[in-house]
Length: 603
Image (tube, rainbow, N blue to C red; front, side, top):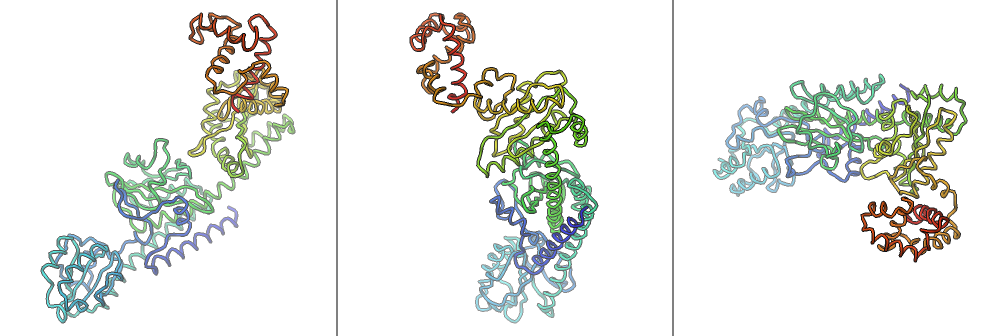
């Protein structure tokens, strides 16, 4: 790997580790890594919040998922050995991550979730009944437990307080004599911080392993392959996938996703980014998903970890978020390399299509890109619509992302490249025939992405024998794009062989003389679509000319009664002249209808 790239990766990750550790150990509300926060702001969603109605819960920060110790585990510490659980035993599995001492009656604003609150009862010595109300308030704020040291200021706990704690499942503890609050603070916080430091250390080791993979040339599949073992045991059924910014899966490792994970994807197999933002989510059947945004200079999608057994803890969150940092840099590196390769491919193919490369040089260079330019060949051009700069940039990215994979799926040895506003492919035509419209429509469909349908035109050339004919074929494909855009509009497929008279008409400028010819020849039928009677008459005229004035065949094709068609023919001759008897007028009408189709119908 390039040493500059290696140094950049190491520096970026180390800065992230330092800032992450600082946030977790010193901040009241741990901050999300800045890149993740930027992603969530961009997507307009939040990774935290109350439980949702569909059963999913979001967990947004590393600090929120860093395990402390449960009340039950705390009671096993030597300093808490003599503590008595007088009420709320159902809540002994609540998590303790902080310890605080109640010194004032209005302590609530200074409390937080997952906190063990200690008191002597002094602040409420004159109003023991307020203790009952306080228990409910502490439970509402998510505290872990309330420990009271009776004696000097509070002789015994009010029965109503004990009953309320039992009802809420909120642990109410009695602190024995001889145990100082400072010792309790020291030992409980030491245990909490020790566990958190251990989790950070293990996550850092896992992160270093991922870094080693990258420094030895590994890509996104290799990074994902290492994650399931870091996130759980074999029995946990951990699987990890990466989805790109469009929500499509690009890599996967570990266990197969369970059926419960189907809810993460829409009907087009794209990840529901807005519904499952950065954080932890509980799915049906106890399946749990963990989502981490993959962001470097721009959004590169998400890492999604799924487990069928057990729960995610703080170490898992840190591991996946740091893996997302590594993945972002890997994707950015791969995109940079791909951009250079794409430029070389594009420059080379442009030279071939412009005739600047000899046949020998063209074939030799094509082999280096895995292409085969042995004929017969056909050139396909996807020409995007004329758009402003912002849409042009999005369209270029769209073409680059979708074109090559679609072309390779259709013809593995085909040459392909994307330019600013076009994508080109040189496909093989082994039977010497131009690919049918249906096959080309499949290629066009692959250029659409959510929120950005492909509204350009796919142009297809005639079949040429080999490299020597590619310049001509390229010009034919572009002519098909230009004519198809006027003739059939956005999203169409136009084959050069099917253009016929339209090829000649495309060379005629849209002048006043051309407009005059239309009006003189078609009369009121020269107006754009919208008038029902004129539209029906124009269609009748077109079918009559297509069937060489065969009235019976025209009536069947239009589902008209024979006499109805005779009436329409009479009306047409009153409007545009005796075309049934005048061959030259019929020729003019044929040309005029072609001009109307190109210049009026879709404008």
